[in-house]
Amino acid sequence: MSAAGTGTDVLRVEGLTKRYPGSVLAADNVSLSVAAGELVAIVGESGSGKTTTLKAINRLIEPSEGRIQFQGRDVMGIDAHDLRREIGWVMQGDGLFPHFTAAQNIAVTPRLLGWDKPRIAARTDQLLELVRLDPADFRDRFPLKMSGGQRQRIAIARALAAEPPLILLDEAFSALDPVTRAGLQEDFTALQHRLKFAAVMVTHDMAEALLLANRILVMKDGRVVQTGTPSDLVNRPADPYVTELLAAPAKQAKAVAALEGAS
Image 1: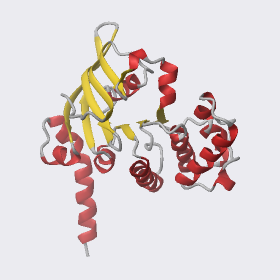
Image 2: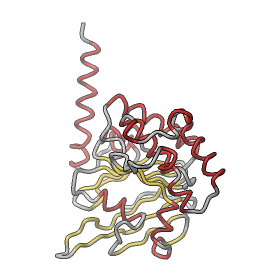
Image 3: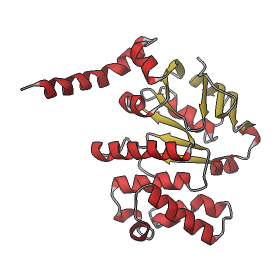
């Protein structure tokens, strides 16, 4: 099933297939597109193919078939290391280098790209302010001296450091406590609206996808079973699996509403 796209798409994935030895299909004919300023969520249980799809975009996994275009270029024609420097990456559990300060973590990609020190320093402080961390307080702080939410904010700043047009998020908020997670989700959405980058987010949490995404791909057994806006999925689920994924957040919302109405 193909996701609708436009001529201004930052990313287009067409017929992506990843086949492992023994004819095991981790991703089967997956298509999606993402425009500037848009967030597309890929939702599914473990083994659904969502992380395989995400990693194929920046060639952490090489596809068996299909075509991936980033800013109109076939990713197979771009050196994999160069490609990853053009695409931001935020993983579950932040992935910061523990022996680097916040500023050093944020500066990893700009240093690799050969930015000069004043430009790196200015960009680092700008990003710390964007993710709502005081540069004077956090610039020289090591990850061990930060909370989980603060580390994840640094991880987002690092992903944005080289001004990438595309950010990939792999369960980026799932390890956080609910209050921190909600705050960081809101801040990420505000950052995207401000900076207009495209984003692809992998999550097992349908509620998160419904709240954050412009469009959602639901995957099961390597295939896309439905693509649509959050409203499309809620009002017109096209597969029993989609209905199943929607049941949990709907049940939780009803339970909270019942408590609010109780005397």
